[in-house]
Image (cartoon, protein in one colour):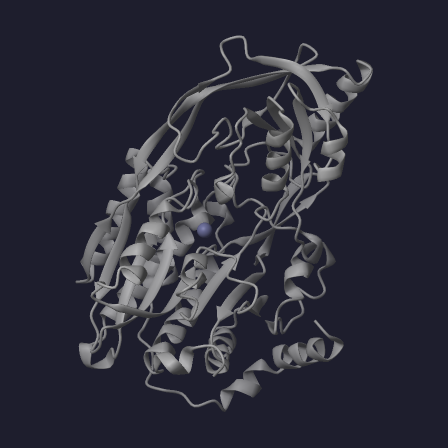
Length: 496
Ligand SMILES: [Zn+2]
């Protein structure tokens, strides 16, 4: 971000209300449900238990969303695809005979994306010499002989918030709670990591297992990673905390750098049917605004993505209260499955609705809602919660008019600590990415998201939800959808 644009952003953020109060206002958007009601939906989802793909809880979550949409008279169905469940049953780690607390690295021991069966190191585990490859940089791995060995590497979270903020063309931070918070600006999100690149190095080098040290994490090893780009981690892997990583290094050093580790990992990978909920609220045309999140989770999934799903349901209720005469476009409410197991549900949806040429509706824009959470930072290794919302971004592909619409909704609803990031040239880094790959890349997308550090952890419980933000976020995106309803597809598209 240049000095000038920082100035402009600050100006806009400081005087946001004044700047946008003069903008034309169309007919009022519909009322959104209360805070208690939206939070009640999050609670209901968390009460189901981890909503893992291919489990009864995963299915129960889809059925719950479907029932809720039907309550508002919305026509619904579920769509299915084949994904894969990855279920560990037994795991453990010993280093030089000492037991170290470890947690399985999800989707490890899986050589091919379509492989199914049992994975097992055998009852005695797999024992091999440790090779410490540090941050897993290609050069440092290549210089070491890792064949037949267990690699020890640091999982690094690579993009601090300040790095993302640099790509923003708008920031609403009127009280400067974000710009004056260096700890928050330094905090990196837990999903852009060196995992894929390191796993590839280890696989190519012939490692037989890995111990990932959660170097940029708080004192938990319960990091439930996604199946990132379907990484082929063909060896057993476990996560350990930074403290336990230091202990392993000390034990290894005491053994002259030739210490040995035993990884035990046993479980099963099976085909799993995904359950994506699609609700259709007809408008006067088949041009359709799609509003989406995902209901699956590996952890309690309060913020990720109980909140996103609750927001989709809140918008569904709001718009279903309008008469057809006030809905120019059709609205589609979708909650996906397979976010954590490879996005097969998203691929199948794309094939059916965007590529087949036979879809009954034409999706002309998309709103994706994810993660309404409280801010957390790691302080001295501890997860430290704030009462402020986690800084959030609205990734945007679309016109200048769409940008103004988003900014106005942010200001109207005082969504503090919110940046807008144009990603026309970078690609969409969220669950909406499948809509922006070619040839559908003309579809305008507005994707709201935040990246709190606890997002993938068993610590993603109800107390992490930014409860006070649930209704303002619902209101803001009701305004965005309402504004999209008044725009032609061309007016929303980039370059306008
Ligand atoms: Zn999510």
